[in-house]
Amino acid sequence: MVPGAAAVIPLFQLFNLLGLKDTFLGAILLYGSFSIPFSVWILKGFIDGVSPRYDETGFVNGASRLHVLFRVVLPQVFPGIIAAFIFNLIFVWNEFLFNYIIGGPKTQMIPYALAVGLVNAGGNVDWAYVSSLSIAYMILPIIAIFLFQRFLLVGMTFGTVRGEV
Image (tube, rainbow, N blue to C red; front, side, top):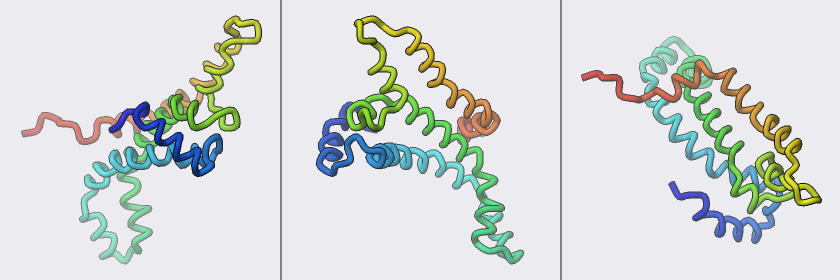
């Protein structure tokens, strides 16, 4: 729950010391360290909502643990997996601060490219560059949300108070 600006300087020093600054491995480790706890927090509510009776029924009928996991539990938590995926996609896709400070020209993502390539050599704003990159920037989240919108609504509203007494 710490804002990114409070953690950027220690993380910069750590990644610089470990030689992970301006590498894709460093970006993967950084975004994974922020995304995995958030995903676990979202998915915990979904997994708690799966009744243990389904597991027990599968085991009584001779199913293995993997069969129960993949055929019984995962279909029930699939909306939560999709919700966690969409939220993490939007977080990582829109993240600029860590990409700009810890990443660099070698690991350039779209927000970084938008900020760096905004002004051309003459000192003017290159509006064609900005508009084309902005359209490319919006395509992936729009397609992902469009494909998974029926699961996303269930994932966002799961666990809310429904007026039951």
